[in-house]
Image (cartoon, rainbow, N blue to C red; front, side, top):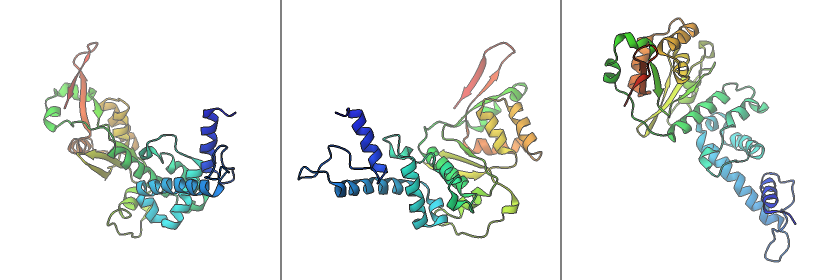
Length: 268
């Protein structure tokens, strides 16, 4: 006799693979296996997961069209079933799947649009935190500024792209109007963060992605600035700091008072 674990594993596998037989022990009112009843259940599960993907990736759906999206999403659902009971978590690997999905090879930017939409979803459901105001940073002595490290808002997400992904996404959500895109203009990096109950999505200035990414990794203000300048000589430190403070990205900062002594921090 199969163990409960084996029965559950077989049930889950049969849900996603129409070629598999009805799991043992599942019978209809007549006591006999009922492939048709199970097929209805299987279809409802797949339809529900496809619907969840469609809700979480509206720009991708609009770009390829609903019929194509449904077909593509079904392939993803069968190949990557949920590993969590929380439906909001489903679809984290959808962008990587799109990148390797041959039928959309002529839309190389589509995977990055999906990454942006995933970042939006994660930001929306992330923990809340109080941002630092400009006064808190202004109170730090000038000789400590270069060595500052920052704690960043838990909803912050960054998306790097060699395509104009922000422009493409913006014209394919809400009331956006699709229009020709100048791919020769280069890529767009995007900052995604929730402020209060709203998710804000903004294109980042030259070097901005590398700057914030370095700060996320715990590098000092000076170290992050060097990373940004190496990436793009046009990087504007004061402008980036101003924009990040205004966006509420910083929730704490830390500076060493003297060499060898513990750091002291400022929190919102």
